Amino acid sequence: MPDYGHPAGIQFYPNLSCNYSCDFCFNRGISATGLISHGDFSSLINILIKLGIKGIDILGGEPTLHPNISEFAVLINENNLTCTISTNGSNVSVLRHISNAATRPNVKIGVSVNDKITPELDAFILEYKPYVKSVASKSALADSALKYIGLPMINYYLIFRDSMSDDGLQSTMPFVEYFEQLNALRQVHNGVDGVYCGGFLPDLEVYPELERARCPAGTTKLAVLPNGDVYPCNLFFRYRQFRLGNILSDDFQLIWGNPVLKYFRSFNGNTCPNRQCKLFRQCRGGCPAVSYAITGRLAAPDPRCI
Image (cartoon, rainbow, N blue to C red; front, top):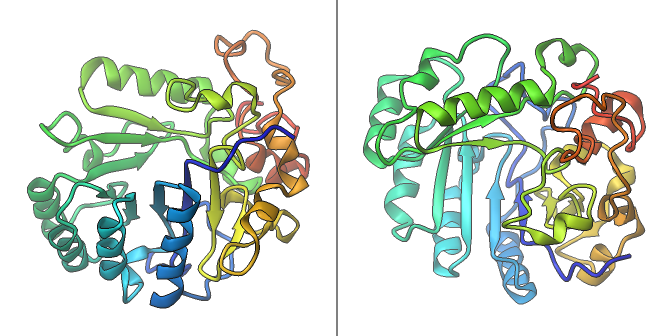
């Protein structure tokens, strides 16, 4: 197994509960229980520092439902880690508190603008300039997203929609169509970028180590649940067989050396049958987690493209 040293960052869920039920949510089917304590979060931060891991993406669930989320943001700032907190924007007062408490630029907030925007959230976005993001769809972008694209100092992210069940595939599109949509936005607006699995197009400029990897899971990132359980990425949380160990109680080298990660660390060519796709030579074959969810096989071609 190649020696990747340690991941560049982790995806962390401080809690799994959410006050929304979005049809595009990739967390459907994950048990909505548990939240990390302040003490365990402090321990997690100390572990990341000792390992040399600098980045932490806080996801959920809805992170602002955690009673200590503002304190977590301050702790991240104090230890000079970088962090993005992804939120549905429902708790604007908490977002303001985080933005005011985390005075350094280390902690950024990413707000979902898939639905109607309240006046309170609109005012927060225009004042604090968080990242804004929405999920790509087959139809035109919602007005709630178009409102902020291209505004000065606001970065917009178009997210490639995940699907963890057959039913969800009806609302997805092939990656090449998403990528064309993303590039069309980039040609018109500044500050536009995409969010998609590196199992399609790895970011080799930022992560040259992905040159030999199937995808970022277990190579440049790991995912951690509120209780400290570690998985290759957050899309594997629902599958106990991909649990690597517990970052709060287990030797990290045993977690990082788990043989479950072997598949993700080796790229042996794109197995997608659509060799006519204009991205075929660059693509790694899609997201193994989505392929596993739909077909039961990590190596199956991404179902969204078939």
